[in-house]
Image 1 (cartoon, rainbow, N blue to C red):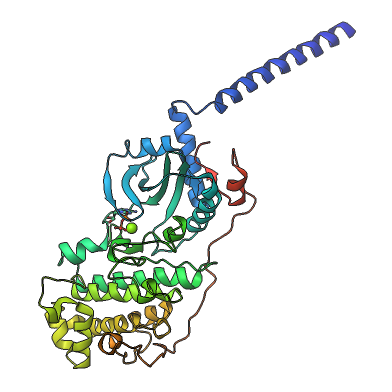
Image 2 (tube, helix red, strand yellow):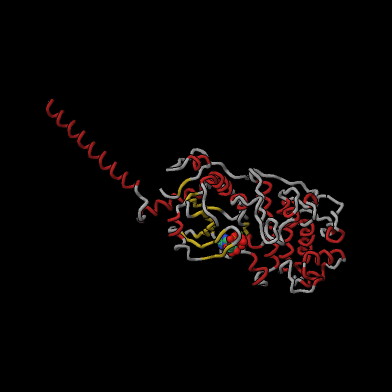
Length: 406
Ligand SMILES: Nc1ncnc2c1ncn2[C@@H]1O[C@H](COP(=O)(O)OP(=O)(O)O)[C@@H](O)[C@H]1O
Ligand SMILES: [Mg+2]
């Protein structure tokens, strides 16, 4: 009997050793997955990607993954002040826009980049373009955004002018205002956009608007150095006066840019058109003159706005005039703008925003545009807890960033 027991236990030990060896071999094979990914690996990667997306975490992609997704950066969508944008598609069918940032990476800005990406990646609102993830490698710094099927608003304002009904344009203005209000008033940390303009309002397949590129100024360390043709910051024509003068800069610079955008929506034209006679070349001043002379009806007719939309168009004119007040404190908060555009708050008569151009002084008034109070809800970005971090650097762990591969 004793002999049988010894044989049985020897067999058990032998089987255990074999099982252990097989498991170890399999694990080692899994660990060296950096070579050509097989289909099972990709499926696992995408399952995890989808899982992370649901958990609202920014994902770190490798340059190889983005190269595969973008077909070697072949499908160009456009380029702007911060980088070049390519269309990409992951193996699970998710379409993305990959923005390859200008410049090279630097170990010193590694932590700053992760911190900013982590913040932007956790900002979720229907009217803000979603950041899925990023790549931070020596040869490639890129951001991976949700893809917006109808591109940017500038095309519909300045090129295909009559493709969108005025009511749709009003909805686009309202959605944009809601997105900015969320950045200013409802995020855990206020985010100033600094570059609100038609090129940064993207439209989905149903022409619903989402604000793009928020947080980018800080991410690219350009908050204080975003220098453009005028020598100021932001984009000429949209940048608030304080951005190119030695005055304190607050979130009110976004309100000014939004006002300039509203004028362009109303007129379906560029605010500055040097091909027009001087009295009409700068649309915002023309709008003010028409408003001052109580000629808003004639203005809406000139802009091709139908009678049924006149009332809402006149509201938009007044809101735009409030938003571009010269003094930042004279401009409304974005949540007030939302209420005024929705029609749930009355709009008082705006002051002349361009007085300083006539007499070279600041306008005397510094009254707020609306007395309506701003309500904050608790819909702020969610912090993750209890997540596991595979192969993460300490910085990635700190900012709860996970890599894309399993
Ligand atoms: N998420 C996106 N989905 C679809 N198209 C995009 C997306 N992001 C950017 N684009 C396109 O790429 C172009 C360039 O974008 P960008 O580099 O941000 O420059 P800008 O904001 O100055 O226009 C945009 O005009 C837009 O048409
Ligand atoms: Mg942009």
